[in-house]
Image (tube, rainbow, N blue to C red):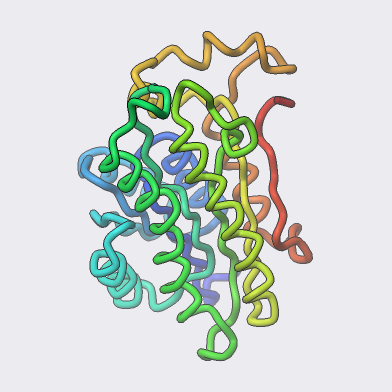
Length: 253
């Protein structure tokens, strides 16, 4: 990339922690400008943005609930104003509630999990396509949805609602990849397994990865930067003929 070529812009939802933050930092190291959204922790988001700037890239951190269409629209308007482009969308924002069998789950919990984990990525992809698609004068780009191995495993007695929401995200990936392939947009999915992030605390078991690591063929949990490397590979030219696929980052589980 020469000095006269604008840096590509990557938007990472849920970019203030865990896999999202790792992806933001790695993207900046590889020459991307970075926009990230966050739910509540402004200090953490600004810390990630500062790290991006320290790597010589531009950064925008903005609070936005990805399940709220008005907030999503404002996020993309801010990106238009700050960068004037979007090249990669990483639908990473997701929520997880405390472990519980289905019979004890409340409706509000189930509704919120699907709103954030399944509908939110649709809203963000919708805004992205309006900017990327050839029919709208765009140059194409990449959408990467962050699912979970739970979509395959089901997470019985823990959070089947979360697993089901990720299953919905995977079906969305398959359909959207076909829908926009001729608009120059590739749509893929990364499926992390047991990764060391603070999300497990939301499920009531901060040490969950260590508890289950013996069930992983590689005998250990994964690190957020290992997921980030998979995301950036799918975003790059090396994956130029790959769309509608699922990349497991699970240690073999």
